[in-house]
Amino acid sequence: MVVGRDAPTSADFPLDDLPGAGRMDLLARCVTAALLRSHGIRESVQVRLVLSDSFTVRFDGATLQGLHPDERSTAALVRATLDEREAAIGHIPVETSPGVSLVRMGLAETLAAAGGQVYRLHEDGQPAADCAPPANPTLVLSDHRSFRAEDAATLEDADARRLSLGPTVLHADHAIAVAHNWLDTDGFETY
Image 1 (cartoon, rainbow, N blue to C red):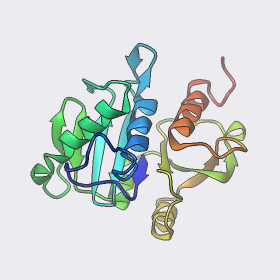
Image 2 (cartoon, rainbow, N blue to C red):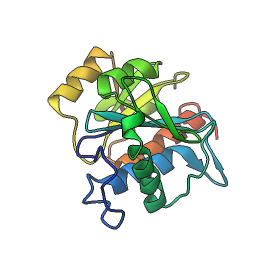
Image 3 (cartoon, rainbow, N blue to C red):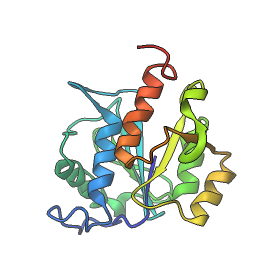
Image 4 (cartoon, rainbow, N blue to C red):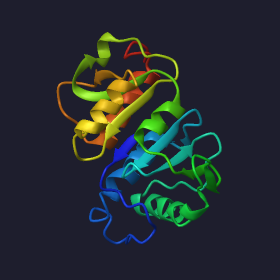
């Protein structure tokens, strides 16, 4: 789950200035980092982009089609999804393309719907190397900004544990790759 605080919630953002569109470039890279692997899609992964605490775009690896590795086409997929926002009524999602849906939910509601133990990726958290990866975790990180106080409180209310992926602060999309390695290797134990 990636929280995009400045992310657009309508489809009127330009594809030729993704950094200027609430850092849609970074959000798109997070989607591809989470879902794509060499010559395939991680079918057991779901990505949720929480946009400006108003909408959540969900990508479901089990049914996803049409995801390409470049950030422009991923951002275009998000834009096409936001173009259907009027069809998202209440907490009922609207599927906008195979494996992509949109729902009117902010961070608190999206966390409640996700299930599993919630982990907030944070440089001051418990080192991932000291933890056994849980089954079906929900990993939460922010875009290019730190979580706001209300986000931190929401995560605390969701009993989120802090998890550190290493001594160096990483870009969100890089943190996703390291988190996948932690999960794929059973806590860096099996290679």
